[in-house]
Image 1: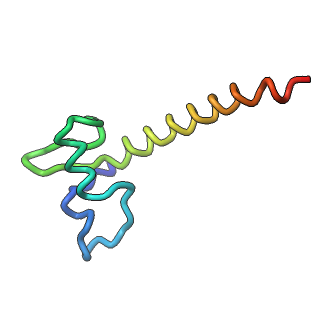
Image 2 (image 1 turned 180 degrees about the vertical axis):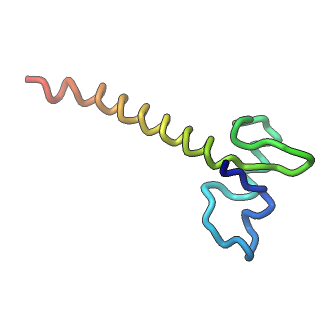
Length: 77
């Protein structure tokens, strides 16, 4: 379980690089974007790194599939 409180994103105590900025996370949550990725627990906004990784892999597969579809006519014949 890789769940990180958003308030730690800009913290000097936790200098890790996160995939999105703190402000973006708050904006996405307020707009209801990606509810499985960013959610509130007991008043604390949480970012789920496992869900982010899953979404990234799905996007990568989709892009590869799209690339194969676009370039396959070029490779035939």
